[in-house]
Image (cartoon, rainbow, N blue to C red; front, top):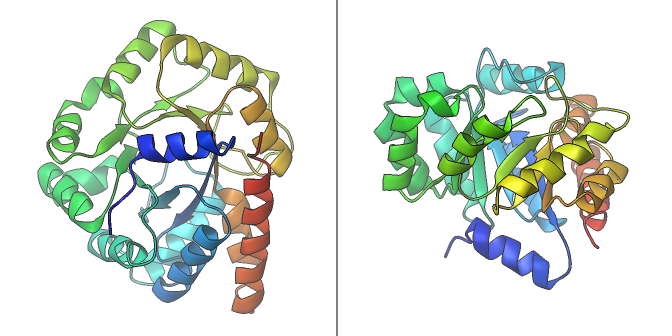
Amino acid sequence: MKVESYAEMFKRIKRENESAFIPFVVAGDPDFETSLEIVKEMVEEGADALEIGFAFSDPVADGPTVQAADIRALEAGMNTEKGFEFIKCVREFTSIPIGLLVYYNLIYKNGINNFYKSAKKSGVNAVLAADLPPEEAENAYLAAKANGINQIFLAAQTTSNERLKKVVKLCSGFLYVVSVMGITGTRSDLKTSTVELIGRMRDHSKLPICVGFGISKPEHVKEVIKAGADGAIVGSAVIDIIAENFENKDLMIEKIGKCCREMKEATKR
C-alpha cells in the first residue's frame, strides 16, 4: 500500500473544496483491539489524516482527558514497541497520513535514530514531540530527515515572530498551531486571539496550518477553517466518548462515528 503524504492529502482535499479533519487518539486506549476498531471507524467516517499518541506517564502538554487515556493504554500493556505494531495494523486498512504525538523521552530512550527508523518501517508520516523545542531538536530533525519523516513543531500565541522563523525552518508536513493558552482538552468556545494567530502564522509560513488543542465542536472546526486553517485536529472530544462508554463498545464506536462525520462535514467550504 502506497502511503499518502501530507502534501498529497492537502492537495486532494483542496480539489474537493474541503479542509483536513484529523482526529487524535492514544494507541491502545482502552485496549489494543478496541483502539484499532476506533481508528478504523474514524477513517471510514471521514478522517483525512490521523494523529496517534503513544502513551506516556507524564504528558505535560495534555489535560485530564488525554492523561486518563494514557493511563488506560499503559495499564493495557502499551509501550513504544507495541505502539509501532499498532501503526502497522492501522496501515493494513488505510493509506492516509499518520502523525505520531509523543514525548521526547520515548524517542531518547528508544535511541533517536532507532525510533525514527521504526517509525518509518511501521508507516508513520510525521512525528511531533510535544516537549521538544526547536532549539534542542537538531538530532531529532536529522533523524527524521534521514528517514523521510516530517518533523512537526508547535506554534502558540506566545511564539514570537523571531522564534517562529526557527520553527518554520525545521518544520515540514504542516505547522501545528495551538489554539489555546494551556493544555489539551475540550473548550466551550474559541478565542479571537486564535483567529489572529492563524493569520500571523500564514504571514510567516507557506506550510499548511492545522489547529489543535480545544477543538471539540463542529462550530470550532468551521471557525478555524474560516480563519484560514487548512485542517483541524480533534482529540479530547473523541477520547471523552471512549471514557464515557466503556460498558458498551458498540455504542462507543457508533458515537465516535457520528462525531467524526459531524466534524468532517464542518470542514467543507
